[in-house]
Length: 86
Image 1: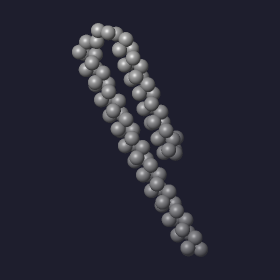
Image 2 (image 1 turned 90 degrees about the horizontal axis):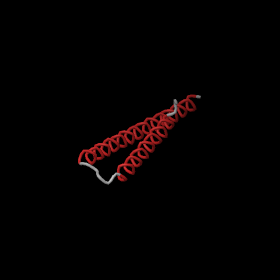
Image 3 (image 1 turned 30 degrees about the vertical axis):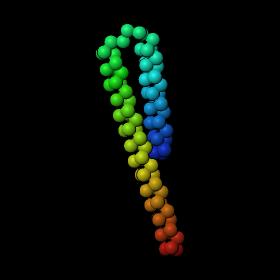
Image 4 (image 1 turned 45 degrees about the horizontal axis):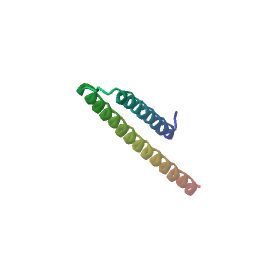
């Protein structure tokens, strides 16, 4: 897992799994016709938590992509410098 792009895909997969769990829990609770106020507020909190997880994973992906881009740029500059030195 040294490649940051692997982390991007791992985080994305984790988010997709969390969304599937959230959708399944919504389906199970919608089958129960007598939803109380507590379960509705629980759904709201669960939705907010999943939104926060998505936002954080998106931010991590952007940061890792920036780091990859910067390292790639540094490598290309070093290779040009080595070629010019020869």
